[in-house]
Image (cartoon, rainbow, N blue to C red; front, side):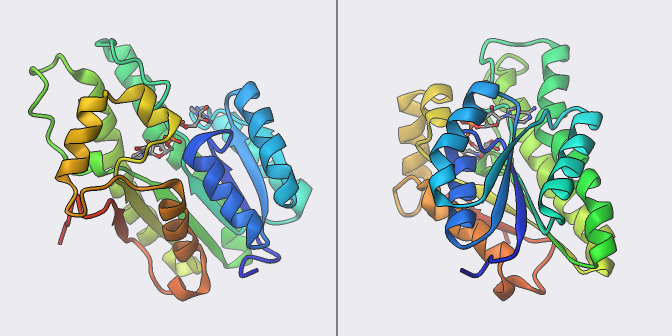
Length: 256
Ligand SMILES: NC(=O)c1ccc[n+]([C@@H]2O[C@H](COP(=O)([O-])OP(=O)(O)OC[C@H]3O[C@@H](n4cnc5c(N)ncnc54)[C@H](O)[C@@H]3O)[C@@H](O)[C@H]2O)c1
């Protein structure tokens, strides 16, 4: 019960890996807010998570400034504090693989990258005031990949997705630098391919197999593997770890 007495927001936790992060935090005693755009997924996630502990659903669009601020205020009002934020929401399962427009590119950046920034900015004042806080951003193994398999400017979806996830790494370091003086740590995990509904919907089976073979351990990762890494960054063992990226990817990328 290492998270007893702590309050965490997990964005995009209505389904998929985000729900697993929320489940892990609840099992270890945290109170959790699901910040989710989709009403249907949010309600389904809430039903699944309620037996595990004290959890609420806060309908949120992380790409909207007012919505992010409302989310932070609701959680503060409901639970009295905010200790942790897991920026997991992204256009992933919902990524439109056929899009090629600049407008859609902007949307992907607004959700995947700017959404993490807006949520961090929304919770930061409360964390600064309590001189304590933990933020974990979710990047991707894709951040380190160069999609040479796409024709230039045509396979925009993977290019854009990977760029937003590279941006998450930069954002992590920026926020860690800004917030460290207030005893707030900001770290990041870069998951390898994980057979969530999102991945099964977004990636072809050939691509999944390619990614599996790129991993030193020749395997995909599980939501539980990822939740363990998030829990590490949110736990006392990582008290002085900040600005770091941990690839949880069975050895696909090994950045120095
Ligand atoms: N599954 C993988 O192989 C893999 C690999 C690397 C990184 N990731 C990352 O892990 C995270 C979770 O992946 P997943 O497979 O569970 O994806 P997913 O698409 O199933 O889940 C994303 C969740 O975010 C929500 N969401 C989307 N836009 C939102 C918004 N504007 N505001 C609030 N919520 C919003 C969705 O409704 C959904 O519940 C994502 O950030 C993804 O990029 C996944």
